[in-house]
Figure 1 (tube, rainbow, N blue to C red):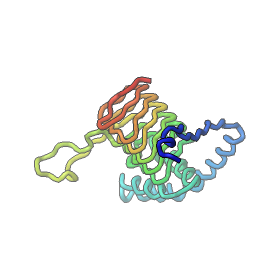
Figure 2: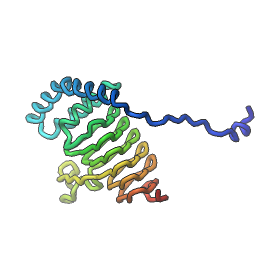
Figure 3: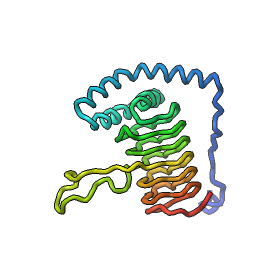
Figure 4: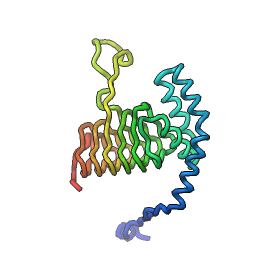
Amino acid sequence: MNPLDAATLPAQVIRHEARQRSPALVAIKRCIQSAFGLWVLPRLIAYCVGRGLLGRRAFMAASESIARKSGIWGVYLRQAFYRRTLAYCGQDVYFGWLSVFSMPEARVGERAYIGRFCSIGFADIGDMVMLADHVQILSGGHEHTTGHPGDPIHAQAQQYRQVRIGRGAWIGAGAVIMADVGEGTIVGAGAVVTKSIPAHSIAVGVPARVVQSL
């Protein structure tokens, strides 16, 4: 085929409609979640022991360990673990492979979706939020305070500010979030959010700026 002819062809699109959740399937899912609640008990015990020995570092270590579990079993295992260790975690959150949390104070709303390879700090992720792969949600934009000149950065005090992602927001692949994102907002792939983005907006770029209201 002539490349010029190929360029005029319409792009192929694969579309998946959202599945309806039947009561029977929901009941089966709840039974599976209950079983994983028992399965995760040894990890919870190990985490509690580690927390007594290592303090806050134990949570990061546990998060990294459980993030390596692949497949749907890994998703259910992470659901069971985080529902018992985060400040709040919805019942049907999808936790992607190799995504980690650094702070137990984080909150994740109902039916949120967290893609693969995400890194999440002091975040409040609302209901129905979707994070694509490789999203980073930092604990605010200024985690290190200003110390004495010449002091190494690791010797300075740290401060964390909660970053809120509003209900139904969509964060594109590779985005870095350092400030609040409003409800129903779309943040483009690779964007860096350094200032709050209002609700029902589309924001793109580095630093991210609003280009359209929804």
